Length: 113
Image (cartoon, rainbow, N blue to C red; front, side):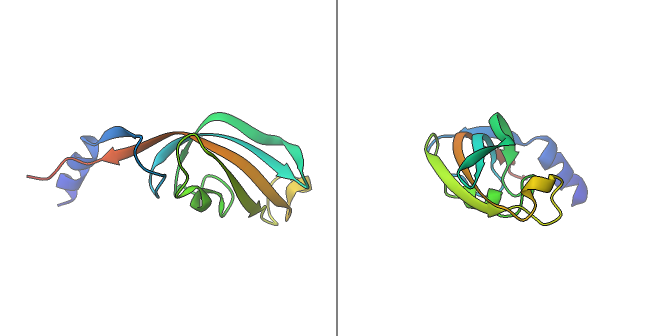
């Protein structure tokens, strides 16, 4: 069964999604800007950033709040930077990110037959 699953993964296709909101596991392309106390902070901005929802690439709580976001509509995400965050001035701080999802893609596996 492992070999079949491996072949199924190899033959997966990525499909552009335009008729639904973001769900867990989607590959997205986002623009974002982060603010602490209403002020944009250095390194808190990105354009055309690829992000897989559920990959835990961003700080805790960020990706899960994108679930349900619609294409090309700005959403606000509120998070708290972890106490062990690498940037001294952001450790433990509350932040708001303004995020726009510009693209949603879904991996579709072929049927096993």
